[in-house]
Image 1: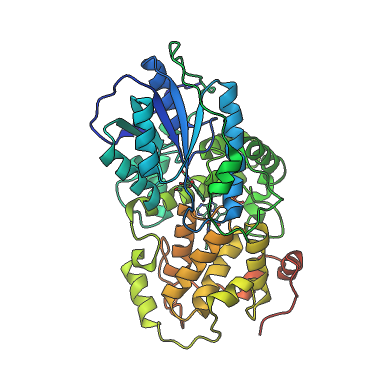
Image 2: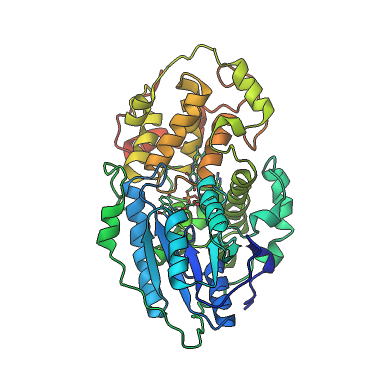
Amino acid sequence: MNTLIHPERVRCLNREQQITGPVIYWMSREQRIRDNWAYLFASRLATRNRSQLIVLFNLVRSYPGATFRHYDFMLQGLKTVEKQLRSLNIPLFVLAGDPAETIPHFIDEYRAGAIVSDFSPLKISRTWKKKLVQNTPVLHYEVDARNIVPSWIASDKEEYSARTIRPKINSRLDAFLTGFPEIEPPDSGGNVVSAPTVDWQRLYAFINVKSDVKPVSWIVPGEDAAMQQLAEFIKNGLTRYAAERNDPTANAVSHLSPYLHFGQISAQHVALAVKKSNAPLECIDAFLEELIVRRELAENYCFYNSRYDSLDGIQPWAKKTLEEHRHDKRQYLYDTDIFEEGKTHDPLWNAAQSELRNRGKMHGYLRMYWAKKILEWAPHPEAAFETALYLNDKYSLDGRDPNGFTGIAWSIGGVHDRPWFERPVFGKIRYMNYNGCKRKFNVDNYITLQGTICTRPQ
Ligand code: FAD
Ligand code: FO1
């Protein structure tokens, strides 16, 4: 078992020297202890310095786009983190407020010697960290515990497509796709910091988000449940992945995206487990293409393109073609409310919207159709992007994620795609239609499954 933490996985965010005092792991995106390079790095740093390791999570009152459904999934998952840390005798502190204020205060209070944070390409996380680095003179390491090949190593620029990033990732997989060591409790040399028990009720009372989007019951949050879901997928879904992954009625996908989004499972762990399975090679390859290449391409997009959250970020050819078709007549025109309520003329679209609202996760194939139809029926492309992002982030458990920004930018703005035949409204952006879906899967079955009326659109 390789127990090394690849040095290129870690980067230093400032030039401070480490001083004596506890090492803080600021857990944000990677909400797990198992298979977490950031935790491991912090733990080893603490051991090397004979310091105490403290794990810190900072709860913000209202994360952009998030609702009670997401907070509940996250907080329930964090409860399992607390349990695990308790068994390792490692204190967990959950702060509440703006991390630019709470964390510097905590660092002062506990006279921390160093801080380790986990990497995210999203602007919100980068702003939090930038402020912390500016205001707090404590050595700060950042660890990419999300990507198998760290974003800053896979490529030094925004990639055009899967075709251009794939060889770059594949050429580094031998070095990075290694097994994880067992969880290592740090050796603090007898220094102990005790943490108060986490007051979950107080934290639930602290958050201020839309409470009408309720938690869902088909998926159980937390590290253990994520591992169980992985095992279930390897047993019952993976062997059908190559042939049936685009069929939303086949249940041949992993349903791991909510766990991956909240860092309750490591993509690297998933990749190793899938590679080790007895599934046909074509299924393993097809799955790893999504889990590694497509997912890490999305990270690359958000890391190198700060306009990932609007149509400003798309390629010049796509901007031009959408502009040329801005005033094309729309056959149907809907505002955000009609989309949100799933009251369009298209029962397939409405069913997909209902899956999103009721289950908090839409099948991947339908997400493309869903977003492209928003482009077709919204008054203009910017409104389409905004509506798609709003609905995706509000309802999807895995929303507010690089994959979501990129998936919407792909569907509506041609990101990572190429120009196709020109047509009204879409211009050269790839088109999808109802008949295409009918060729892929039993549309009526899907609609029935979502509990909506089964009529064909005109
Ligand atoms: P599986 O097919 O089992 O895939 C396993 C993992 O591979 C996924 O969990 C994900 O991490 C990765 N993956 C699969 N497909 C893609 C893809 N196209 N791009 C990048 N990574 C991929 N994914 C999100 O995680 N969050 C989102 O908010 C999100 N919004 C999307 C919006 C649109 C309009 C589109 C077109 C795609 C979106 N995706 C999003 C990507 C993809 O649809 C989901 O990752 C996938 O459906 C998640 O389900 P799963 O885990 O069962 O997928
Ligand atoms: N991370 C935190 O550090 N604190 C939070 O309070 C928090 C809330 C939150 C709500 C919804 C959601 O989807 C993610 C949330 N995250 C939170 C996680 C996180 O910061 C993100 O996953 C990354 O920014 C994504 O890259």
